[in-house]
Image: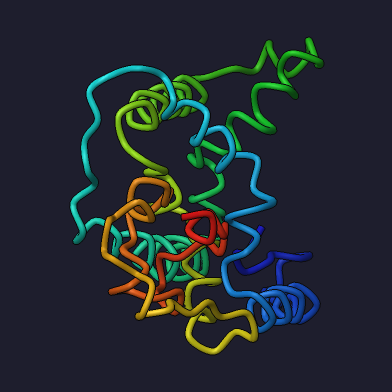
Length: 199
C-alpha cells in the first residue's frame, strides 16, 4: 500500500517504499504504468472490444490527485483505515476475488462491502470498454505519484518538428489521448509506453 502504514498502533512512513517510487520516477517517470501494470494491460485489452467509444473529460484527470492526497493520505491518517484499498477496483480483481476463490473460510465472511467493491469493478469494466484507461487517468494514486516525475525524469522523448505533419496517428495510438507534438512526454498523463515512437 502507498498509504501511511499503521504498525502496532503507531503511524510511520515507509522510506524504503518512497525511495523505490522516487528512483523509478526519476529514471523514467510513469514507465511502470505503461509497461508493468497488469490493470493497465487489462484496460487496453477491454478497450479493443468493439463498442461506441467516448473521450474522458480532461478535468477528470485531476481526480486522481484528490484520491492521492485526500483519500490515500488524509483520510487514512484521520481514520486509521486504508479506505482507498478497501474499494480499489484493481485490488478487488487482483487480490480480493482470487483470495475468496481459494479460501472457503473467507467466502463465509463476505458482506455488503465486498458486493459494493464488485459493483465498482463492474462499472469500471464498462468504462474500460468505452474509454481509454479510465482508472489510470482518473483514479490511480500510484499513477498520480509517478506523474510528478515526468517533467524531471531522465527518460524524455522529443518530436522532430521537421518530420511531424500533425497527422494525429500518435493520438490514435496513445492510451491516454496525448498529442505528443503538443503535450510532450513531460505531460503528467504520459505513460512512457513508447507507442508514439512507431508513428
